Image (cartoon, rainbow, N blue to C red; front, side, top):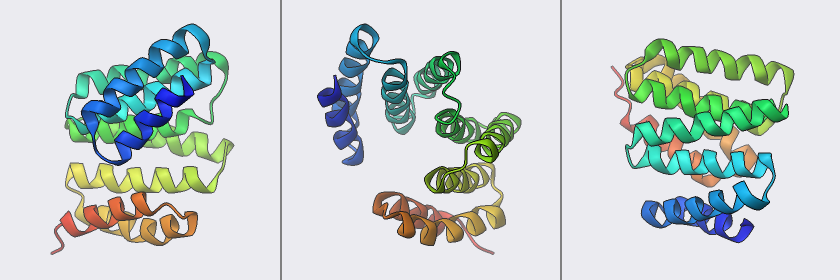
Length: 173
């Protein structure tokens, strides 16, 4: 199960989305039978990311919500922060501004109770993505500019590149 999840993560980082979906799907089935709630939720979150990248928003939302439900039922509120961020970005992508803002607010509220540098980075990056997808240019630019050095400090070159790409794509007036 862990091997399949790890292979899925590697394929996701390579943007080999079909292979990532297959590996996470297999890992998810194994986790349901043999894993822990938190591991199943992590796998479902990653599978949701794959579906989101493939623009299959219905499947992405279903995976994120299943992961969120598993975590909430088991009392693992800290991990819900990342799920809320993913759901915020997804809502913004699909034009649900209120849903996106509600999910960002949820993530910020949870972050106040369960702080962490990486989680702060993810919430900040999500603020930028939500602003970008909703057309709030100034907020998007400010968020992405702040997240580039924060991501470097964390040593996450992929998320730094992600923030830089969106910074370039955000039109400045």
